[in-house]
Image (tube, rainbow over all chains, first blue to last red; front, side, top):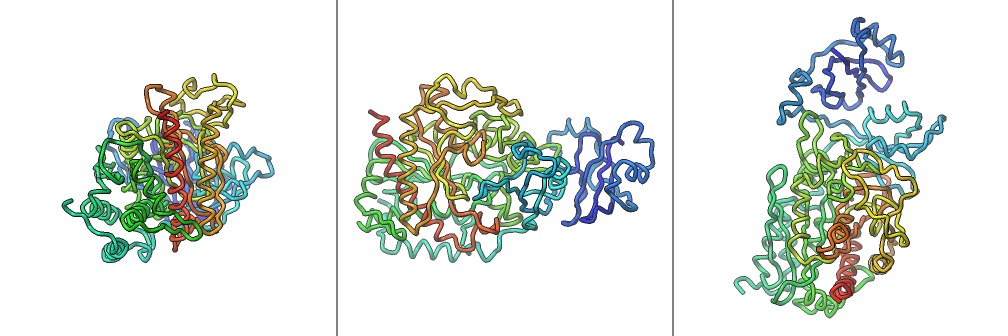
Length: 188
Length: 354
């Protein structure tokens, strides 16, 4: 064990944790979390590995609280070598809730230009502000880096409203109507 | 409302079958990551040899749903105008049949309504805010490559909104043109006499010209992207670097872009901003920069004027920005701007031929 993935709720209470091989990060552990649960990967030194997990988390991540429960990896537990060698390896896709957020310079005055280094899904903003679509993990990472994050909207993962998709009949009728005055030239 | 991939494919097939004098549909050489076929539609009036081409692509980013529909609807607007001798009217902007005739008689219009059909299907079935294609990234639980970071232009330099992380929504991919969807666009640039390219996206009401990776300058031609490292997964790390853009080309980009802005504003008053791509935020690997950069990287290639157009305003709800409940007003703006681009192309391409 070289790392542990910790799942926590919006009040920073730990709800679960799972062990993770070195090459897998929180996004690739095959455990699906509820929309209001975030996760963080906690890397362990050899000394830390010897500690009980509850002691470890209390001591090294005091911002996270509570009595965590251990859950197994939901997908295959692979070693680092196996994951690299298997080119077709596909872990269950995780689709976290996204949040539309504004990123502002926090009290530490970290330059906003550094947000670009965080590989975020940035949305255009009419006022030139840094507006992003992020997961709870990414929000936390921004806060940890000293930014202020203002959550604007929660965007649950869902398909396009079916009401906005044409039916086949509607699509066909549209074309017929639009080309009604145009002579067809089939076979010309 | 929005068309599904199947409906877009059926529509282009119907146009080619019912109006072969105007439309030819081509299947592009590469299927998508999920094995979907991708089609290009060529539109022209009259027969004869290949003409200078204008290539318009939509749907590069999956959630930007309006533009594939706008492109096919534009084709039909041009058709009905030319056949009937009627005026195209988009709000306060009109395009007389004579103007349409000049466009269709002198250019080949190439449309790829949806570059990324896998992504569009995913938006409609699972996640309406999905952006990338649907590539499996081995060893991760994250799918997709940002097709507008995957082109071979300063690829893999994480300047601004470009990432080497597979889990990022702006992931540039494992290599330049690693993705079949992008290679399909490249195929058209390679094999057809394309001289103008526009990649239609949403949102922000912008008409964007090169460059995307750095600010422009017109005085130092030694500052060329051909001298920049690629594939580093690092920022450019050249403080103050500005990319050379020949002054004549800059003037042409600005002038043609302004005509697009004017044509859009005339529809219902929406004022788009004509600016370099980097002024939005820096990016690398974009399709439009690649299109324009080709002839610089390889002088044997034809010059292609490349634009990115960001259609529609920023609204309070990102969903309404990317795929509004009523897309019709934005589509009219878009179509008007694209007709203006086609009209400007007549001059742009004539100047290149001379």
